[in-house]
Image (cartoon, rainbow, N blue to C red; front, side, top):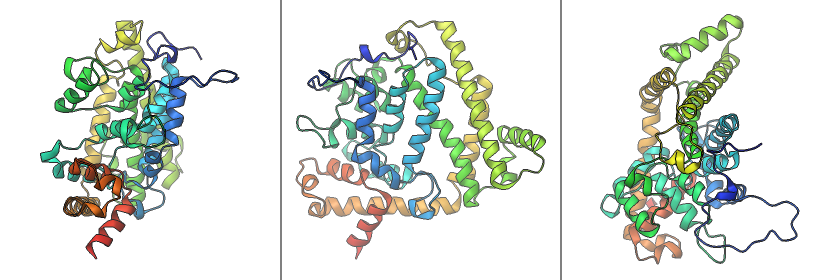
Length: 376
């Protein structure tokens, strides 16, 4: 499939931070730069750990609940579907989607918030920035450099959010690089914009599924949300005898499909209005990958429902409060006794950041085991 002029062309990539030898001589098939990025991410240690990191429900609470890994795969699938319709670089979309949560802590957002509080006097903690740190520094796979040495375009997409002070630090090391837009305005590539939106679409759909599966939210509650009620009534009219999980799956399937089409149509309209002819033109324009106004309003209502009825459900809060306690306890222990960490972390000069890196890399179950071991 040919790329649209506003897509990221791998032949025009801004390249990698560290030069690498050309291994294409005598090879019949050459992987382009973003395909190689995707492959490096999939083979990384941090990617494998995502299978045991919380999405909403702790890993041990059920075999069929989403984890950070399955969430990342769903984001990649949605991103590629939309990207193909828009003529974007699907390999780049997939690479960004698979890497966007590599820096997430154990125990979901509660773990992230706890670690940020622990690091308040040491530069704080942001999981998007940590994902970049993983691929730039923490992965140890190559003899000539730290990290995965990903392309500019993939790294740009991974860094979805960034506090100004961190953007200034990155800009000092990498002038005019991936953090510039947080200081001087502008947008990332369309592929990066799309991954950000696909992340939210995936959250809403799979959290409905997991919420109902867990018994914490019901069809009756969900029907209070106009977006869900519309698809519920539509599916029931077409399939009057449908019930249970088949009914839920069909509602979610249609909801997902229509959200995808809404994004495609709204983005096509924005592209038709602004007519960018290059990636640099995209970066100078407002965000172009969006829902329609109605689609955005309905999605926001659904997010608010899930926030109040699922993410703040007493059972979920009890689990996440425990996760927060585990992270805070481990941070204090490692600061007091660095030798409880592996030597590579214990020997680092910046001990608080070393502890944060070690904790952020843990899975839910490893953090739980460490907590039990150190509290014994």
